[in-house]
Image (cartoon, rainbow, N blue to C red):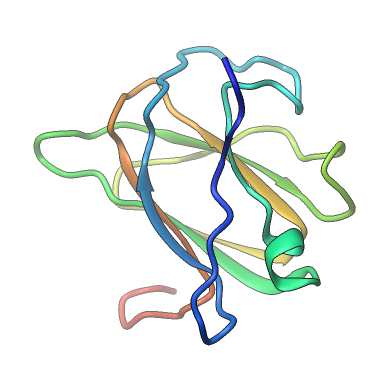
Length: 121
């Protein structure tokens, strides 16, 4: 299985991605470089670490589940332990180099964004 890279940037230079988990994986691989993660290479896209990134679990009535997030602040080979983001929860991360996401739920919708949209805390 190849890593699924999500390297998107709008014309304005802001990082804003809405996507779904396509390869569901139930267990923590305990390997930061595992191919099970959806990868958001924010530093590569913006040319710098992002000051603040929000990760939103956009669960719906049809597809609901937990999203697991690993954050790197220093490079693509080092990351935090997995943190759960529950249905419709929003997590805020600071000084982000890269974010990796997985879920046991296929087609789980999520967003990775710099935008502090109305209901984001």
